[in-house]
Amino acid sequence: MDEPAVRAQLAEADITVGPLHRNLPAPELIARSLARGEGIFAANGALVVTTGERTGRSPADRYIVDEPGAEGVDWGGANQPCTPEFFDRQIRRVSDYLRRREVYAFDGFIGAEPTYRTPIRVVSRASWHGLFAHTLFVRPEPIDLEDFAPAFTVIACGELPVDARPEGEEVQDGRPSGAFVGISLSRRLILILGTMYGGEIKKSLFTAMNYLLPERNVLPMHCSATAGKKGDVALYFGLSGTGKTTLSADPTRRLIGDDEHGWSDHGVFNFEGGCYAKVIRLSPVIEPQIFNAIRFGSILENVIIDPLTRAVDWDDDSITENTRATYPVTYIPNAIETGLGGMPRNVFLLACDAYGVLPPISHLTPEMASYHFLSGFTAKIAGTEAGITEPEPTFSACFGAPFMPRDPVVYADMLADRLRSSKTQCWLVNTGWCGGAAGTVDRMPIQMTRSLLKAALEGDLDHVPMSTHPVFGVHVPEACPGVSGELLDPRCSWTDPADYDARADELAQRFAANFERFRGRVPASVSGAGARTGL
Image (cartoon, rainbow, N blue to C red; front, side, top):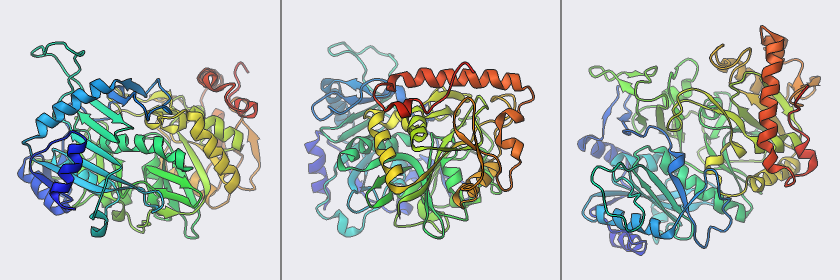
């Protein structure tokens, strides 16, 4: 497809742009970013950029257009409606702004599985956003670009603030304007205004896929995925900062993907062609695969580098705790380049517990799995969202509520069906704190979590005696190779057991209060599989 055809397709969405560059290779995009002053080279060869005021996602500024085609949206929480008229006004402003400005277009796909892959287009003002899309999504073959028709188009125009005035109100000079991430499901169009944070591009498209794929009997999942030497697949669910990317970068296993996947009747497939890792305090000893993946062709967001040597200071959080790296999945040694895997043998729900009371690992029945999947208990980690500066306990249904447009029960029912039909083992893993609450003790060592996962993956916990936790009802292994038995029982790791009991009951009450919205909409066996209060 030539440039006029791309312009014609954009015109159908009422978008007019200036000079257009389509699917430039990574070295050319990097060269243009350097020439335009968008970024600089780090000593390791990565392109270093800053994103301005917004250094994380802005969930309060994400909207779905309330229009025909959005009937299945579960309104409320992260799913805020905006009117078609408001969205149209932003389209006109974007088109006027881009009419004479240079843009970069990436045409490619979401989804490695050919049956379900979705053609997408990302149009951006910043050339590094073009590199971001080129790196993160599934790159096309030249033949794929012939007669290319995107099913979804993203217009990333982060330097243009949203016009949030009520309709008809006059412009007031100096009036502050914020960000706007607007998703039109009927027009298959996404607008990103007022934020340069790259994560908004990937997460807005993920949100769209989470709406569309259940209609095709595909479970969209906010998880990483790996495969063992025998092809045994494992999934790791969790919010940003809870360990999805770190734990999936395992040299003993093959990486399928680090963040977004689909589970179809054929197995698991990666949505993306790259990884987007949090890199604050990145260590070449603890996370060597990620550390070595950050080189030429990668992007570093909001990291600090020495002005003379260009060496990266991985510990410097003076811009944000949420420093990020984008790199192709092929930069991880032994990654599965097809992005495809079979039916999962193990599923891990990663709960970053800031209370410090959940067991480091516990086994879940299918009913318990549904309860904890719907609960999505974890902690928001500093920097991943605007305004988050310390670990904040929260519940995020499906371990990804900000990206789930449909009723969480829809996704939970699909997961439960797949766990049963595939005879998949499910585990709840606490990657947060143990022995005390956040701020009183150090976070659980990643080496211990890796040992626990290794035992589960290799079947070493299959025949270990399990005890039922008196508060949370989960099944806790009484022994695990390489891990002290007292560490498996979180109460034993607290200096004051009575203090543990009080904190555990406090968390149990929060579980119960959060789950009230699901009672009556899920089987009694699921409602009864959760935490017990007042013990």
